[in-house]
Length: 129
Image 1 (cartoon, rainbow, N blue to C red):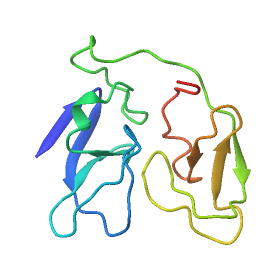
Image 2 (spheres, one colour; image 1 turned 120 degrees about the vertical axis):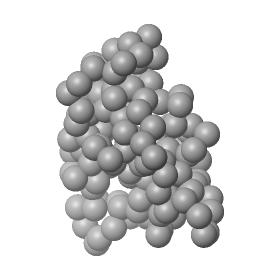
Image 3 (cartoon, rainbow, N blue to C red; image 1 turned 30 degrees about the vertical axis):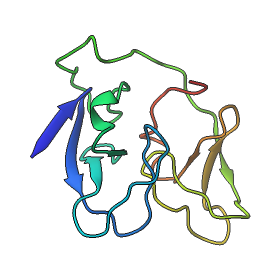
Image 4 (cartoon, rainbow, N blue to C red; image 1 turned 90 degrees about the vertical axis):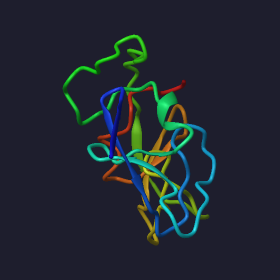
């Protein structure tokens, strides 16, 4: 079943590795069933309880959301640079671990958001919020 909110197409998903919510930064718990929702287009991950509170538009979906009052029009781009992490870090977009020995991901200079290189183009333009 697909839940459409703010242009996102959320589907209940089971995560094989520890994952964090992009909305509340909380750990997504569960071992057997589908723990949270993931957008099919931009791959953002949220809790089941947080999916209706998502206010940013889907980055990969160009169609306007049906309920325009729930969508906040924010357009403050991030300034991502390649970063080497000395301790484990998680992507704030898809919630999974930034892996590797060097150049594990990208970090915004202003708001310190961590993302995978593949997730940087889908990250919402909400720097500093």
